[in-house]
Length: 119
Image 1 (tube, one colour):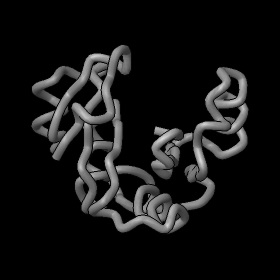
Image 2 (cartoon, helix red, strand yellow):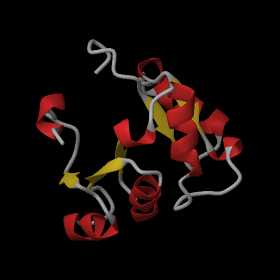
Image 3 (spheres, helix red, strand yellow):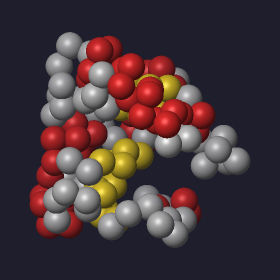
Image 4 (cartoon, helix red, strand yellow):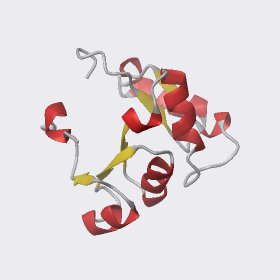
């Protein structure tokens, strides 16, 4: 996605310092243009504020955003923000994630092709 210049953000319920530290430890922080945490919003997921703010900071319309989420409240937050959600079935089943509003569900990111996520 970086080669395609796709803007990328993390919208997390975790604290900003902790999220930044964890992303740096695993070598992922450099892949994200924006980090929005619970420190930046007044309401947590399923409120869409974290995703709306991330889109605004990226200067991208919410309807142009694709969210990868592993939680039911996160999928709901993305949907309520007007974004398309891809569920990641790490803690919840495909059926649960789809019921929450995920357009698609993946088991993990292994072998994921950007173009396979077409609208």
